[in-house]
Length: 171
Image (cartoon, rainbow, N blue to C red; front, side, top):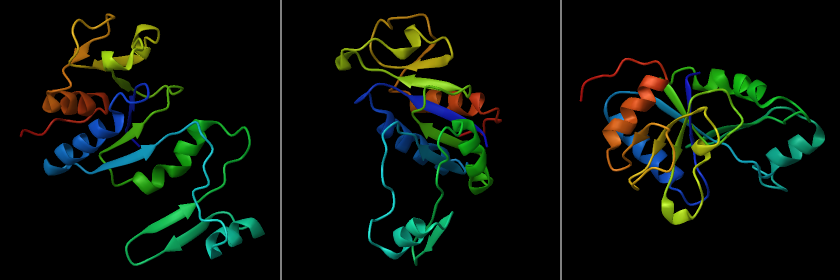
C-alpha cells in the first residue's frame, strides 16, 4: 500500500485538502483510497445492533454488507503496533494507486503538513524533519521544510504522486 500521510494541527485544513486531492487525482485516472487516523477512541459500530452484538459475543472480524456499503470491523489488539494494523488493511486497498492517510505523526511513511498561521501553532515540520513538505499559502514559511503553495492543488498532487513513487500522468 503506497501511503502518503497528510498531517497538520486541528483546523489546518487536512480534510478539505484530502477531499480536493481525491477529486483531482481521481479525475486523472488514479484510484485513491483514504484512511482517517485518530488518536481518540471511537466506537465505529452501533451499540445494540446485530453486528455490535456479534462482536460482543466474540466474533472477530465482523462484516456488514448492505446495498450501498460494505464494512468490516476488526478488533485492535492492545499494544499492537500501528504499522501491523496498516498491513492488515493493505489487501482492502490493493487496487489503489495511492492511499492518503489523514493524520498519524508516528509513522515512517512520507508526510506532508498542511499549515495555516491563523491556527496560532508552529508547524510540526519545524521540529520533525520527517515531514517532507509544508503546504501553506502563508508567507514566510516559519521553517526550512520545502513549501508547496496550498492554492496550487496540481503542485500538491504531483508531490503526493512523487512521494508515493508513482509516475505522473499528464493533465
